Length: 544
Ligand code: G1P
Ligand code: ZN
Image (cartoon, rainbow, N blue to C red; front, side):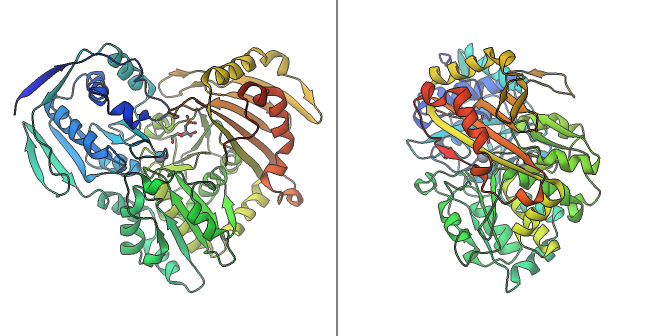
């Protein structure tokens, strides 16, 4: 078992995006590509001698190969101990749980989240720190800088290890522990939720539950938690076999991609609760009988009802949402008299607030909700929260949401994505808007008056780091908002995201169809941004 120093050439495209480094599988398969990024991470951490890390992934194509490379490199870099999820599997929230529970110094998660997998799909790697959360920008930036100057990486000569048996062994001087990827996470869920009450609900005659794992990582978690620990029928679970190409699907739990679930939940005899999760298990979609819960509403409802749930009985320290997420959560925070923080897009921005004890619940419009139990968004946690809430309230999902609206107002909300737009055109659109802030501010369009036009920047209240250019905001006198930003997770061209929000306080006007309720704002954006002219697109690729 010989230590080796391999000379390599730096790559110029390894700057981590919103959530780690994501590229086409073929990019990661280039010689030294993954190795360089892993070494840059180790170097950015000041080396890993005497450190302990976790590694696991969402089971997508190249997961196992990448993991073997990381094992050799970790040993070559003198890591003390590597904890690996059996089969190379760890969902993103489970990785966060494991890092925290065992006091590790961090870990790698191998995933491109909800992006399609397979040989022609995407692969990704992200580094989480000792708090269990995504590396903050100062670390991702240090990784990038190291990657730009990298000339060598360290590894050892060693055959592939057996990933499928739970055991301890040594690779060189490094200890390897293969753990059950599900148990620690499932145990944590049992601490937070009333499992006996949920189990009872699942047996009730007029209650039905369905969960779609979309052939992604939550399959084995769902089987353990819903079936083995809560007694749900096997038929409650859809697509639970983890497949390297996610069965050819796009593992993004939304109305467009979670097709099997949507068909069932929008049928005549729909179950009471339907839910889905994404590639790496951090996203969720919640559906009631013929009813879609927007993620922005979901996090607001979770915060408003947290006191009814075992793990949150003592109240909330504060809440947070990403800037484009609707302001439904702000209304709840106001009533609870707690702080509601507004952060840039990406879970990493919640980390400092959570660590400083300022937050209990946080969420993003992009189907992400979680609490301070881990430092990642958590799909199954959200599903369990809704199950527990239904067990307490004994009314339908739709009734829970509508009652919430009646009390707090309804924030009509939609996001329009234009995917794979030519990067030059997308940048032109954004830059031309930046130049027009002054003229836009105060401009009147019919009944709509813009009172604020700016580029969102965020000063982290804990470490005073400043993140600029985090999305363009047009805020109107009636509190409506149009937000525009470019995605930081796409792997080809640019993805333009437009977010629309309108607050309705009149109970008689709360049952409009979402796109109709937001039509005025949508057509104003068409006009102001000249999307069709600049991008050549007449329709968004995805509407959520
Ligand atoms: C997207 C979402 C963002 C989420 C991220 C990772 O990032 O918008 O909320 O945190 O995926 O799941 P984006 O592509 O917009 O940069
Ligand atoms: Zn994800």
